[in-house]
Image 1: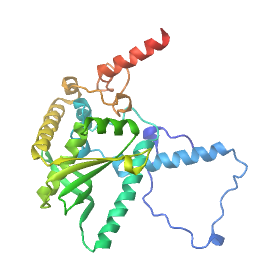
Image 2: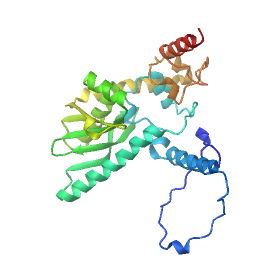
Image 3: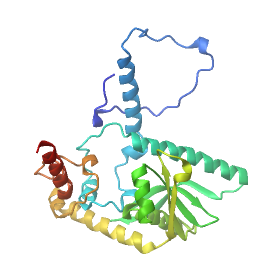
Image 4: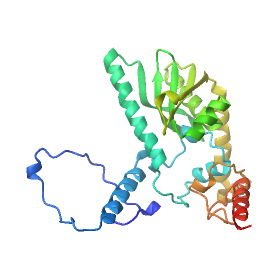
Length: 290
């Protein structure tokens, strides 16, 4: 196997993973005991990259609740045009860690429901939060506590983000909109939600270092976000990539953006990034060579 190369990663079969019942009956495999250990590392890296690339979240092509409040309007424009990935990234390990913690917590609250003998918690429940040009916007909410009428969105973050949110006292607009969007989806479906929350948990620290933010549900926050996305979608659907020139950018991790292409002068071939970001990169380079 070779090192993963972004979109060239193979399609993964959707099969189970049964454990062998008798180790003595295992089918033979080629003898590679004398192969360089680097070959094993290459195989491990490719298998992990392939599995992450084939995860449902990675393959999702339509905009979801977590993206309704994306800071960059041009990013939304690219997304709504169905643009292919132009800037492949290496193995997305930090998101994978978050996914692993989500899976652990999902199991915990399913077991809690079983213990109490009722469905107090709705876990990874899919809801429709609204529509854009008639197309439903759907997503799965991490947790709803029906007793407290509160949504919970897990965010597994590093120490810098955790310090920032504790200092600011509130999440980013993107996370805030996502939280309210899920609440709207449940209320529309007949499940009462009057409070939203985001629970920040450390990816590199102890559980007690986490931070729970919450506020009353406000439908208007979601309606404003849906209107913005619908306006952007209408523009790019009518005029194509030409419309991208009219959409403002944002300082939102441009280097990791799937539509980023350094130095691009043709938005159909990729976005050169937000000017604030590219100016900062230029200044950093200049300081190194000065």
